[in-house]
Image (cartoon, helix red, strand yellow):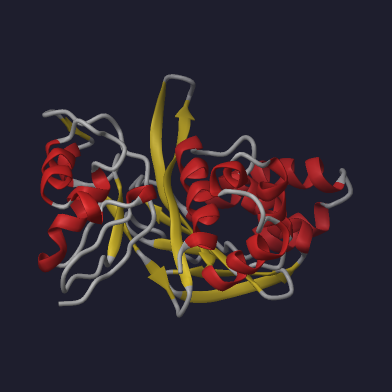
Length: 282
């Protein structure tokens, strides 16, 4: 028997018997191997104290439920986390130490009439890099204060931390030109916000990576990865398509997902909560 500590929590919608977007809400919190089904249910219910799974866990395994959804399991390892509104799953880790800290959904208004689900996304960060940042600057603060610290959020986006934003396409009619145009607007606005208006060439160097020849059907992935030296690498369906070295560009893209006005507020909150908890994950 071995123990595994999974110290991260992810926002979930209120539990109900109804279904959302074609998926049972109670069944789409964390996808794990067959032997780890209990983990998925426990993490799914981590923010709902009245959930039957929580009631069972508190009575049977009270000592194993730790802060931020931490649980102790026997012979089981979580493999993926599911974005609950779409049912799209994300691996719990990428590479050796880049771990999933938040999942969310990008919506877009269609002709001002309704919102469509464009893509689900997962935000990953290198554990060692985040621990070093927290240890160097926030070691004397409890996790609860770190989470609400604006300087902490800014440091996460400014520091040379290895991170990945993984997009999974939900809207089946989306094409690469639409993605390029959307980034032209959203990233362009962030570049103006952080660096002024004279950044057209930098923006073009990024958006030009999304060439018309690339196909992005439903379930396909786009990875926006920040490597050491503030190098942004773009991969479509696992294939590297180009990179741009710019701290300003990296900051602008991260701001879309974990900044003060993110695409999904729950994803941002989860990311900050889980990033802060990394310092106490020994």
